[in-house]
Length: 328
Image (cartoon, rainbow, N blue to C red; front, side, top):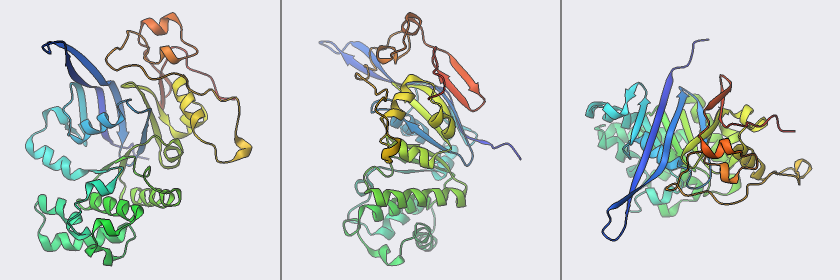
């Protein structure tokens, strides 16, 4: 079996935001939203990115999309170095990367029909109008919607239908990568299942590479091949979904897994190690592990120096001095 090519590679990626304070705004502080993230996503993989609000997930996605300029490190997308990409390279990447947002209604023009919304990115990239019209019909078929909806306006559609339109629009330029930012959180549970199954089917048929950002661990476990866990701008654990779900090693990952609701009452446990306290400030980062103040296993070593990456196996890494053993 041939080795998969790397579609997205992050090497020591940093994104800091400057915050000025003081009477005349001369004091500078830095919000380290993404700090030293190194990660590889292979062609055709589905990687789920999880973490609490404020952990840096969306900022990381914005850097990959080219919407936010990185502070340091390197980002390679389909072999293109984002920091040194030419205008032609960026034009190519904008065709290859598509994004689906949490609230499709806010990203569709209420005065444009579904057909116009799907055609717009193609027309911007120079696709002839007749070809764009035909492609709009094709992608609507791909998301299992009748072509009569081409003449509908966003306010006439349900939440599930709007998300299908957003997915259809994302597919219009034949992307290689799709970034899905909370793609099902605004939908009813029954509709969530339909959208997730659609996304899985499209990924398999078109051999797409997905980066899925969500707070719903059940969604991540259902759709992802690998899971990346972020905490206050750092990647604390990364591995296959099976490894992370069955044997989470970082105390933060273990707490996240314990906090996920269990639908089967026979499998519910009362001795869960639920996370206590609030995340710290990204402007007041100490020298040690960022989770140390909330971690029940923290030592002086944890508080004084940042742990190095430990590789449990070639597919499972953890940033922790005291990685936990197998969950009983």
